Image 1 (cartoon, one colour):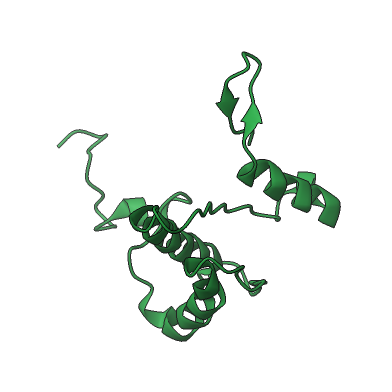
Image 2 (spheres, helix red, strand yellow; image 1 turned 135 degrees about the vertical axis):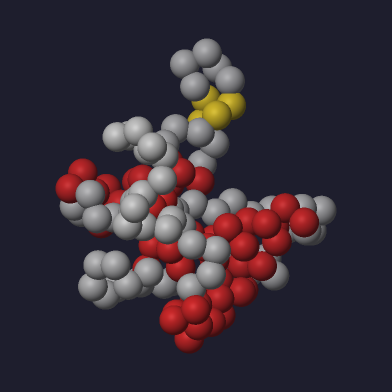
Length: 126
């Protein structure tokens, strides 16, 4: 074994410690996931979803829960694309450049609104 082995002597799955890792299942957040699902469910029927404000201490699964449910909702929309026109977007408001509600709303608008790029092609500016 070399000094830079590809296996960790301490962690069985070291990738779960990375910020970009998102688990497939959140077993300790069943109630919260159900609440989030109920808030987003109207969007799956073509009606506006309810507003959701996720809050709590760092590391409790807010981002993982939101991204998992939005992914599930987007998959549903793609399956029902003949009947449902839906775009999902995840915008984290924790960064300092989104310190006001106007900046946050502007970022959300940019994420869900198609724009023309510099060449005149339809694209999204994120």
